[in-house]
Length: 107
Image (tube, rainbow, N blue to C red; front, side):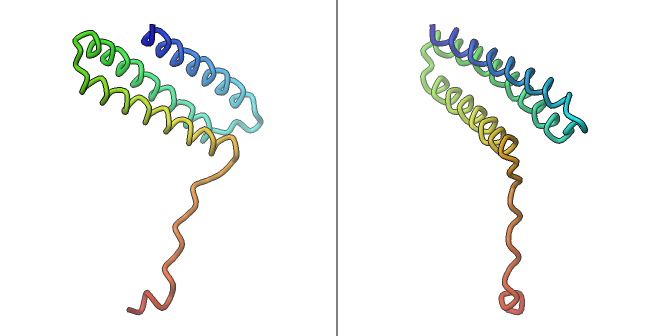
């Protein structure tokens, strides 16, 4: 049951990403940087699908250490998509690191 829900969640995300790609493709001019990010999400979902299948196999063998490890990896990949998607939606770009203070350069 849990694994079916996991695969359904991945499929739902795939559908949402496809819809987002279609919408962004129609903007004038198309935002290629956003399309590239959406394509990277699709690659991450492929990885998650493979990890979920492996996770299911480990659970069936009661290999709980690997189950835990795979859950952490899947969650981390989801968090990456979430964080990046928030930046895309809000238009936030990663902030450059501040330059060191001039007095520190002389030391």
